[in-house]
Length: 173
Image (cartoon, rainbow, N blue to C red):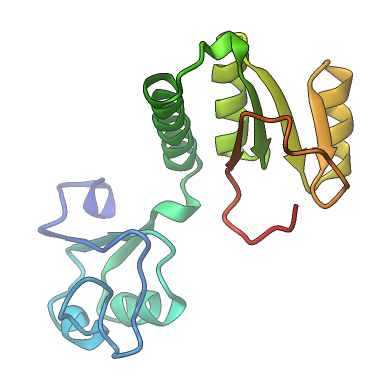
């Protein structure tokens, strides 16, 4: 990234992912307050984080810092989803005693991670069932021949070898 289209930033501030201000008023994982961080920022500063709280965003911007929030970068999010799906696949392949084409795996969620994971699993011949909160997604998957259910509908989970939750919110199965 360049500053005002020319040159580079003089300082980059890498915030924790996700970026959170804890109850004590510090940026999580540090002994730095938002105010002390802002005092180190100027117009030549780039602050990078994920889910940066609005109060911190405003404070850093008021000092002239440019903010880059990775939670708003679709390319970053897709790359992380693929990496998470590959890590999950690696775990299954190394820790599960059965051949992938003999497994029946449920995937809760069909967002970025769920889509990537399903593609990898289907490629290896895994029988999969997707649980989604969106009826249109369920119908679309079923039209493609992929077993799918709505989250919360009665479903037999005991027939699955593994159930993987890819959604970041609490969901009742």
